[in-house]
Length: 169
Image (cartoon, rainbow, N blue to C red; front, side, top):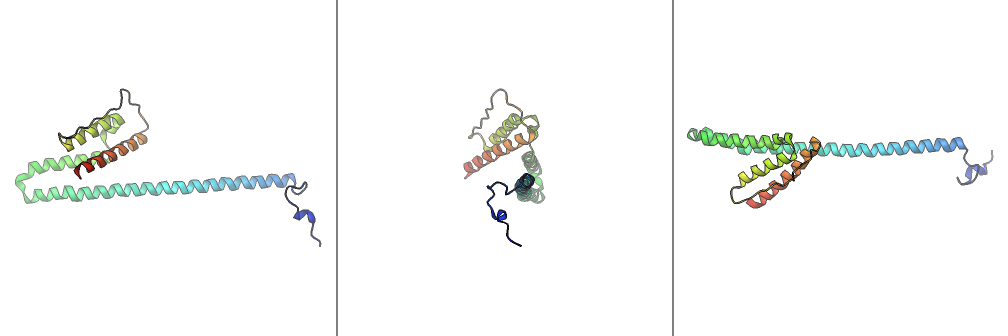
């Protein structure tokens, strides 16, 4: 049994592969490329999913800290000083409303512009009379898909909170 020289020939030589073989190899290459693309997409989706879980856990941790550090402390003051119930009650209600608004601002239902104007008003109220906050969006603010508006709102919200934190520091 001898070695056929055609089996050792380079692919560019005529007669090395027959047309059905070329078609089969192309189909295998196409399927391999599709499989690799699916694997890449799967990894990207897995990364996005994990980032989403991480973000949600950070939000939950922040909510738990806020409830523990602020609300429970205020309730502790109420328990020790029943005479200050009205003043502390109003402060607790205001803080709970702010926490609820931070979770999903109701004004976002009316559009990004309205929600940002409300956020500006809230920040101006918290900052006091020495700080001026102005929101300018133009006359016709377009509506975007809800998830886009929420993301844009969160970006602006975080930027405002960072600026407010810098004012305190």
